[in-house]
Length: 230
Image (cartoon, rainbow, N blue to C red; front, side, top):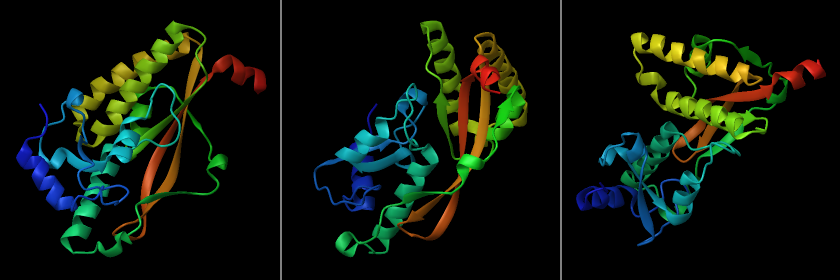
């Protein structure tokens, strides 16, 4: 079901009919986006709503996990964008729309960060723990079967990126076991998995000093190529 008229009205008042990401005044050209998609169990509640302009709404929904480019909007980031802007509107700090939107500032030297090969599910869960999102990098699949296993792995990681903080320890045991099977299937198809954590920072809006935004890079590489190059 879509958001109720009451929730949409409350969201429009809270944002002052400005987009919560770019902060542009949009008048009627506004849409209310589900932070957690309905297909993933997201509810039609005020807490799960973020008002966006047409352009930012398209950008948030355009990320393709099968061919990842750049850093996707995580559920946590969207909530922070929204809450920061709602606070600015509440305090009347909107004059001239001079408050800059949040920006990601990348930490220099990430290319020198060592990558760790992932060989077990619990190792991957530990790598994801505390990260605000994951970015996928992979070698192009040569067959549909290879594409399917890579896609299956990415979907699982996307789910875990959003659910990690809510997961009970007992659930992690089962999730780790399922990840072991996926990692084994990847290896049988000739792929190894590597991870590296990058510290990026959020700055702008109501945030006066940069705040840490840990991001996990996941690389799916052909082991034959790695052995050849070593």
